[in-house]
Length: 109
Image (cartoon, rainbow, N blue to C red; front, side, top):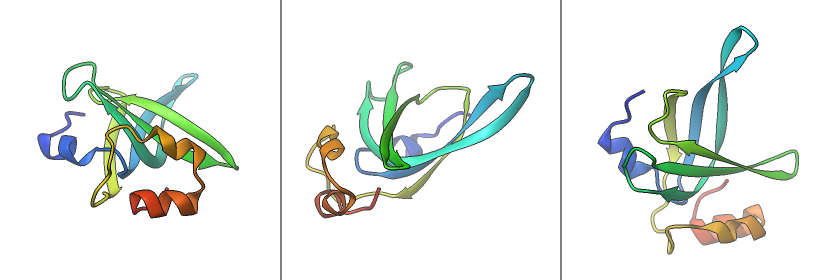
């Protein structure tokens, strides 16, 4: 999936995104979705650029690193984007509760 420049600018720290990726299980292929908050974006828009998405599943924090230019990613939906985040890497979110995260970032995880 070629990602356009408009989407590049919207994938930033604090944004809630839904990533649809193709997963191969045996001979079958299905689309898995992973939704959460972007906590980091690395290497700008070059070939090796990545973004890290964090969510809580069954009370356990889960993070996935997605390459921006991966052919496995079918589409990326931006659910919400924060007005202002004070840092480019918001790793401190790992130690906060959902309520504290909403207060700091301005959007729910």
